[in-house]
Image (cartoon, rainbow, N blue to C red; front, side, top):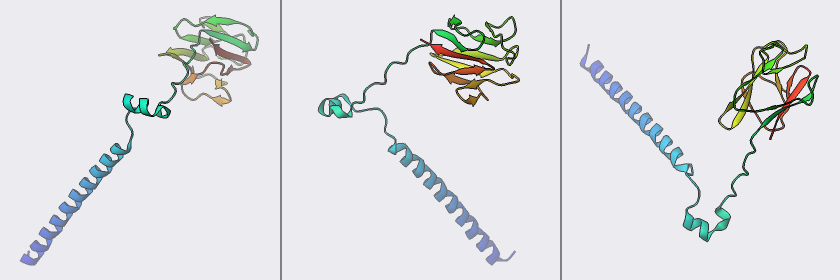
Length: 159
């Protein structure tokens, strides 16, 4: 190799190193600037006293579900008390709520608590489980009064 080729390769390598260094520094600057823009916490006690409009009202306390009520279908009016254990829904005799519904599978869906919320998941049923108008594809939280439809049966969580 000629000395000119070696020198050009050295300068090319040096240029690539500087490009790498500048790209790392710019990425770090972007991360630091983004982190600085986010507001952490609310106003201090002194700011809240001087400017009461800065203080946000706390959200209303969420009511807890204590009952499962069948609102439509062959078992309309049936009420189960929620005890914190999962509830199996389906036509099978081992189900917690045995559905007398031709469109329900043996082990159709499961209603289970997680923290202070209840979730519903379809257990691979033939006709699907619906939360509101949407068919379940994964476990979703169930709000109070939201209709869960399994075949002709509709259930709701109530306080």
